[in-house]
Image 1 (spheres, rainbow, N blue to C red):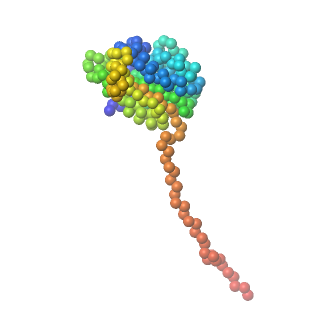
Image 2 (image 1 turned 90 degrees about the vertical axis):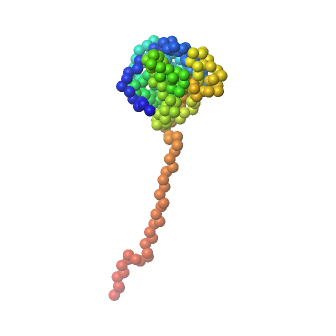
Length: 239
């Protein structure tokens, strides 16, 4: 397994349209997230990265939505994802649509997102699945340096492991869109073989209490030693 941190700087696409079949990916991800937008609540939704900004989130119950990236269109804040200009515990929900796929240090990015999220805040992560037809493209020399094959493809199990270390409760996880060149991703295959889906999505919540509480070790109480009556008393003989 390759380390999460890398010295290689990856340039992410400015929009979904810059990737082959990018609009199909965007539509598939929007369909997956549609049932969840009404469940998210709070005051501020942070959409980190240009691909996050390109997703339709008008059905989300959080009205104040901020698009954040270093450069691109339709942005409200120009900032580095590793140094977000927001106070600690000030954001109710954060959307990372393939943002980790172009991060040279995804651990650091997740820690920064965790810093700005409130307790019980929502975190939505999407990425490409390496065990898919799209992942096979990384093995082809002529494709591995093109979008989206140049992106980093983390397994869903690895992403879940990172979230567990930060004490997040995973509410939903799915893989979908098996055939990348079809708009519906191959409905039959996506229904019966979702593990081969080109895309992965995780919906989680930040928890402050341990998800698996550790029982307190209560030591056996030592019995109090009773002093023998008169054992330490001295008597003076009266004349």
